Image 1: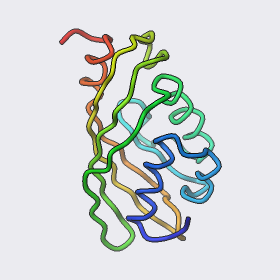
Image 2: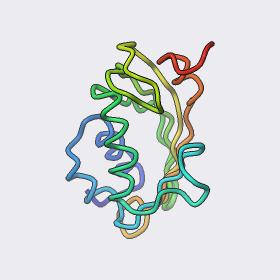
Image 3: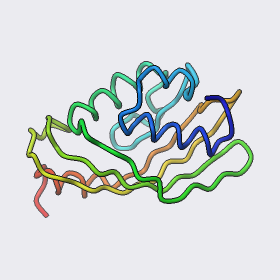
Amino acid sequence: MTGSPAALARGYFALLSGGPVESAREILAEGFVFHHPPLTPSEGWIGRDTFLARALTVTRAGFPDMRFEVADVIAEGDRAAVRWVMHATHLGPYLGVPASGRRIEVSGMNFFQVEAGRIAITWAVRDTLGLLRQIGGVEA
């Protein structure tokens, strides 16, 4: 799925929403960099396989039914910005919080940079405090 930044961004959220892991090779550059404070160091997690192991696998284990609703996509040149809402059920441990069985809704944004027809970098910003409150990790 090489293509426009907007199409690749939508493909990224299809992957996160239960799409086949193999599709990551079509969407993400091998040296993909994932920036997601406070979960990643300032330089981000470097490498598509690192992202799949540290982010996608872990998040799918905690929220196996997660689905991303893409609310807005804005693209210009080699970049895209996406505002999204994740809907999921907390069915496995996540960020040190055991499964609660609670339904959650979390909003966020990603900014993507595309190089050679694949996503090279993303910067993710989400309401992590709201997520932790919903799953019982911190008090409201």
